[in-house]
Image 1 (tube, helix red, strand yellow):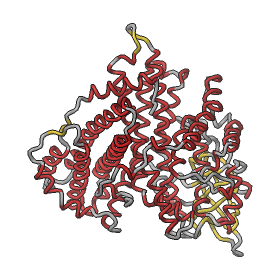
Image 2 (image 1 turned 180 degrees about the vertical axis):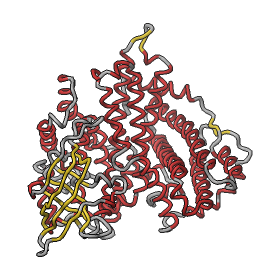
Image 3 (image 1 turned 90 degrees about the vertical axis):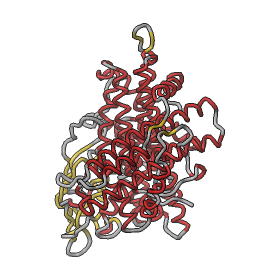
Image 4 (image 1 turned 180 degrees about the horizontal axis):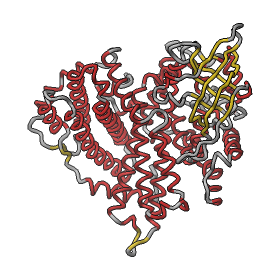
Length: 594
């Protein structure tokens, strides 16, 4: 039976039930390779020849040309139904596209906004007339799409936006007034998905706004740290007349639309982050193999192997969780369709179901990317700091991933808060019953001082018990005040993420074991699992220690600390040797080849 969103915490999953990247079809891999070839030929090679990155202030025509070229390959209509000129790919293949397009650097942001947040509101919520009018032109890039939610005073608190839409007296249109900022593709967009409050409504509504409606003024291109080749502007609406038929869904549905589109954006950002991380790691390995110091390649030194082994481990673990989740979304969509939901409704249902996992992955994968680009720059040394090698561009481009699609702080609190809501308000996840079993498990392990290889399932079960136990103690002690104790919530969210990613990695390895994959790869995969668990236990000990020590006195801290020491006890592996073995494999392959 398929797990509900967040239910991984209280139920074990069979390896056979999940998707792993080793199961991509030839057709899916052909799409991936086509996208990578496009990025190499149209973006990377010209960049190497010119020695400079794209800049939205001066290269707008080139960026638009790239969109048109990608549309000719069908890449602008990946998620658009076939009847409107798109490819209508399944969600997981769309994630693979996101991983592949990341090698296009800032263009990944451009096409990502066009194919995701700029067009999916119409795919998911548009009327048949709206879809027929706009989607074919988005698929061909005749219309460049953009998404206008954020305002100067409304960022994380998006529903507090001040942009207003006033109905005309004859009911034929709305008069739109307001200001939006940080609008990707805004400098050349033909249509905007705009969020505004109709009159004095409590919640936002969403509109499809064409640039040629008039009353739209664009600010200058923002001067940014990174993703300089993506257009980012402020957009001002002054008495912009929007036809009434351009309202998306119903009045007041805008905030709901925004949240569901963000679920999609978050996990797509995750796959893009992992694609960027793999690209960075490969560049690091190539350079480390070529760079000679003390009469040998620097890839032969333990300090460099530490970085390479660590990057490879984090990337392999993160992608295991991404594509597990993407397949869940596809399966939930299929179940909803069989139950009578329309195609658009079923897509929304699938995304909504796994909102917890999407938030977890956005945080985890963006921070894996940041680690990878940072360590890649370090391996390059002074050359990495120079613009000549191009590594500093990746370093700068990566930084935004922890900010957009909801900051990582917001997403940490969202993953925890959504899980608790499903457990205690909606009664969809039975944390209480799971919590009642914890004392028995604790007593049965009182005299266990170490974990050994082969006990991975037990370790993951104990990780889950620790999260449930400490969350329960915190909830009882703080009650409704817990919402204000953001430091504690974020620590618990980090543990939740460790549980999900570690279990996803374990299930992938278990499935590979049963499929009898090539032996040299399996040895490394097993070692990646061991190293990840070793480090994950350490991170969990620290995060839970912070949470417990931050509770008010009298919160049974002594018992909690004892439980943390017991359930997150030492795992008897040699992390240095594991890292070296993992690094040696990829160094010999001259890149990340899994």
